[in-house]
Image 1 (cartoon, rainbow, N blue to C red):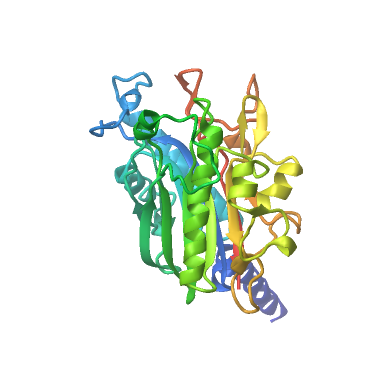
Image 2: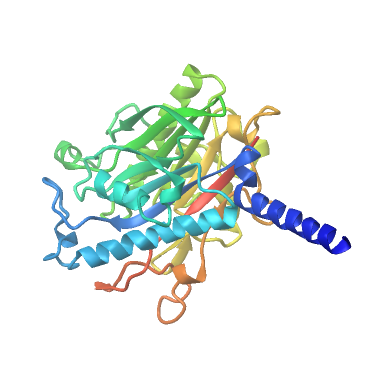
Length: 362
């Protein structure tokens, strides 16, 4: 009899642990929200009007169906492993460097992440290479209402000096739109912005990234006026660090929740980059370009509503997710993200960025 009681107790303990490990965060109104730059997720077909030729079977990268399949499997593995670590799938996951809706549909149906049943929000952007931003969401958690693609504009009503830009240069410039998706989680209004700000190549990005940040910020402030109390998350590959002007001055990023006001965003990665964390390496230096920040309504949330939570060492509110298989273990690039190509050769890696995320809890 004692043996039976003991066995029952063990079974109850194990089943309770499994339930906690696999679903406690979701059932307890705790959700993971993150971002992942998928590093050139292209299919093997040409998209009319896009400069995607290097990602064709006869292109510079000799981008075959086998390589594409490997890339999809790799991206799905990372997303699935984040779910294993967190005990739950991302409720919302922003992504960038995706060619079209086709690659997104192929990714969410990969066996490793198909059980998440992710839905997709995507718009084709004017970027010349054809890379876009998109959002995955779990429809049983996030109730979609609307979305929009916010274009980059050279608005004169800005602090940025465009005097070095000719009208011809402005007319010729193309970059990714900012994606905004609005909906509700457990009855609370949320808006998610997914950004991929202009790159550091070409010399003039120092003007373009602040303008991209300003575009996202202005729309966020409009939403706060239209929907008082709305909770806003701005995420993306900013091509800038949390300490750069685009993030601190134009997106009003603050290092501490205590100093965040309704005109600011709390940026968890400000503290983390100062502590030595990195989500990618650029010219040999560690950076955090992959940023997830929240508005005051989510940072200093009213009691009983969703609020951002510390998740790393009890004090950092963001996480840079990396595993040994995602990282070069030897050679010249030891310690940096294990990417798809290196020096023009396909090496079958994952991405040149690590994903980042936050957790919100009610």
